[in-house]
View: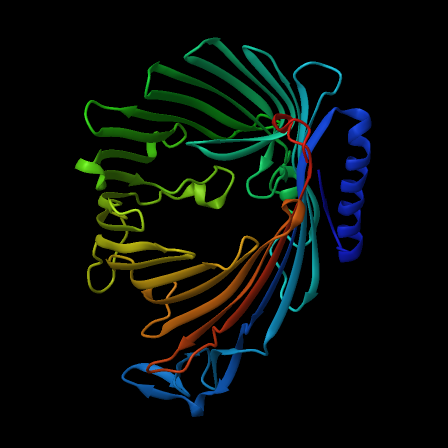
Length: 491
């Protein structure tokens, strides 16, 4: 349910708008009720891309073994020519998306309803190509549902959300509740490419020589039990195979658990297991305890993380290095107007089993966070500072957000941020500073408008470099329609 190719912005948005009008017009005839919303989003971006350039080798100087030109490191590819990267001319881009989502009921059969979420995209203008902007239309959700007292059936385009992540498919889901505390689910159908909301044969277009049959099928099932009040267990199994059954894309299982323990304690945890690699992937276990007299709560978390990649990707041939982490977090919420929190974590990485040239690489890192939220009348302020040191990168970042409720229909938001990151995704000894202004407007008939703009600039300390300054702006208009069956027919 996706169309790729050359995008006509006006035609795309007009088609989605006409579809929404048609649905609204047909709804009173085909159903006793329909409720949904139209969300129109506009995004604007200004940045300065980086491009490759060449300089004469005679203009390059050697500074302590590092070849430099005009304060920037260069790589000399021949005796007469060297390569470096320079900022290009400023580029602009604007993208529009139109979402229409709704649920209709009363379709002539008791318990029958239909749900859909449609999205249209248009690359309005500019020099930068937005990701997926060439995909003019998506049906993200489009399924019919039949609800009975102890079972539910869904057919069409749908998705699952579990400890295994998001998974979209075109197919059938059956949920049965044979007992009050037991739910059984089975589902399956044509698999959708993750993050693209479309069949794999469309997402993988262009590599037909490497994948004989690009379609794939997803099958899964889950058991959810509540053995006692306050305790829930969920076990899920899921696999994906190529349509021609020449191989697996994935085969995984997950376990999620939540339980209230005696006293002020609560326990929750999850893990997933990858049958293809024969290993536990992501896992965490958190023990939470409420503090006496309502002061807040304390959480102790143990965590394991291994990146997951489908077997169809090149990353499936690698063995990612896992890390294990212990984190302690405390939240104080005794006062109604002030909430504060702080956390500390230590992370240890596994052996990457590679040869290291030069100084040994550390395998531990530390993370610290402190933050607070203050409510004073019509003002709400939230601030947080984060520090990360050790393996991988050094990160120091802070954010401050302030919202003023000027009236019942107007809210004004101010944002500020600053960060410095060295090594991975680095800005080196430089600091990026950003700020923004936004407004929230609540109109009649529950119409909402959010709009704002943010400006980011990089302060250079001791070297020239690429210009990472950016301007980002957005607006989101949400228009609800239909009636709520629980509101007695009121708008």
